Image 1 (cartoon, rainbow, N blue to C red):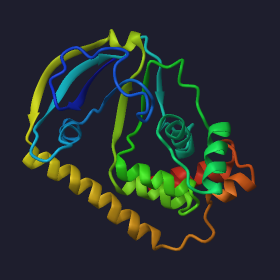
Image 2: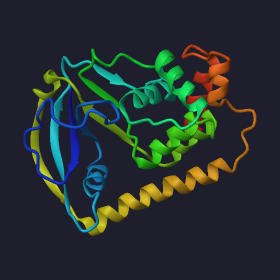
Image 3: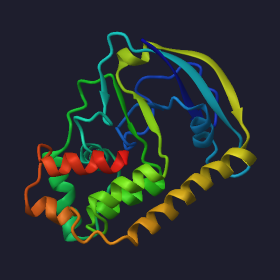
Image 4: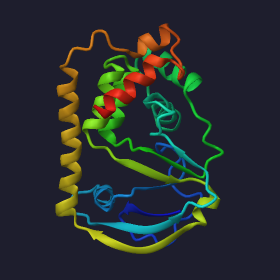
Length: 234
C-alpha cells in the first residue's frame, strides 16, 4: 500500500535523511509528515513573513510495521505516555511528578520495533493541555474533548532506516506566510478557546490524574477505554 504524505519545512527536502532531526519531538527522532497538504503548509510557516514549503512524498508501506496510536486498542493515555517519554515534560508539582512516572510505568508502548508511527501531533497548545491533565487540573474527559475540538489532525512519523528507504519525493508546494501563518495561529487560538470553554464545564465525577494513580488504573480498565472513545466520537 502506498500513501501520499506531506512534510512542512522552511526548505525543500528532496531526500529525507535517516538519523537527522530532534530527539525530543513527540515520538522521538524521525521525519514527521501528514496526509494533509494544508496542515503541512501551516506547519511550515512558523515565523511571520517567512514562506515555507510543503514537500510531497509517496510512502510505500509494504513490509513496514506501523503503530496506529489512534486505533481502538489504545487510549489517549498511551499517546500521552509516549509524549511524556520523548518531550521535555517538565513537572512542577508532586502529583505531576507521580503522574508522569505512573504513565511511563503503565502506559508506555515500546516503539523500537516499529518503522512508522501514526497519531496525534502535540502542537504547543495541545502540549499544554497534556501538561494540565498530568498536573491534575483537568479530567480525562476534558482532555479528550480538547484534543477533538481543536481539529488536531494526525501526523505520520517515519522512524526506521527501512521506512526512510521507502519514501520517494514527488514535488513541493510553496506556503505563503501571509496566508498560512495566520491559519496556523487561528487553529491554535481556536484550540485554546475551546480548551478554556471546556474547562468551565464541571466534571466533578470525572477521572483525573490523581484518581488514575490512587486506583491504579491501567490500560485494561473498562472505564478508561469506554470514556475516551465514546467522548471523542460523540
